[in-house]
Length: 35
Image (tube, rainbow, N blue to C red; front, side):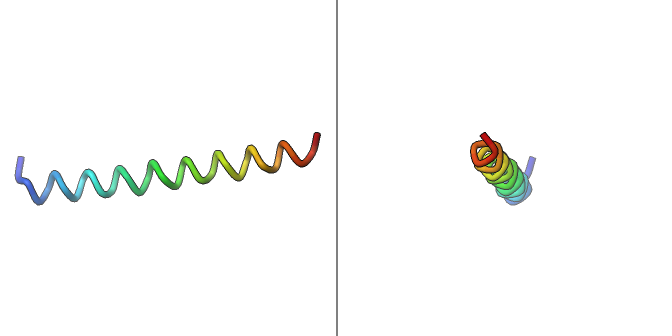
């Protein structure tokens, strides 16, 4: 695989991972507020 393609995949995966992480944090904060 090309190095540029690998870097693109890595950055895309990192962005997806961060958005999922932020979504879980916001969900956790919402649940914590209810109880």
